[in-house]
Length: 167
Image 1 (tube, rainbow, N blue to C red):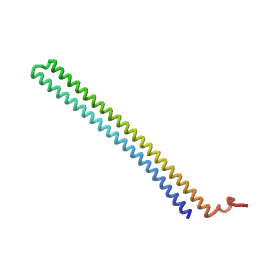
Image 2 (cartoon, rainbow, N blue to C red):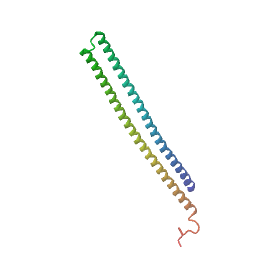
Image 3 (cartoon, rainbow, N blue to C red):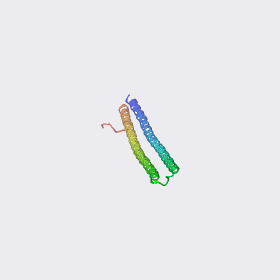
Image 4 (cartoon, rainbow, N blue to C red):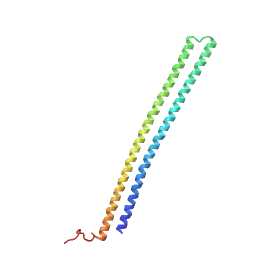
């Protein structure tokens, strides 16, 4: 009965080792997929930033054109009021672009932190998988030792062996 138990334990431990290795590979693949998803999200965010900047530029151009058209129609295009209004548009445009740049910087910092977290998760999963493989190897060793002990206790030391002889 002990031999059968030892063989079954040995088989189960080897299967557990295979599963632990597959689990470690799957965890690494999952972490890589998360990093790729984060990279794609950053590209999307950068495209949105570009779109927002273009929108700000277009709106500033339209406002500038409206102010110039009104000033020309009233004959005040060179007045200080018209020039101040045009300067204000430039100032507001610069402030809006600056805010967009700040938000982009925050987004990039968050993306870098998320990537670092994914790297740490990968390392944790790798170490957990390694631990599982080591535990499976230990079970294989224990099952082999149990099997050897069962064989030895069932069949004895074997012919010609001086082990256990009290002569």
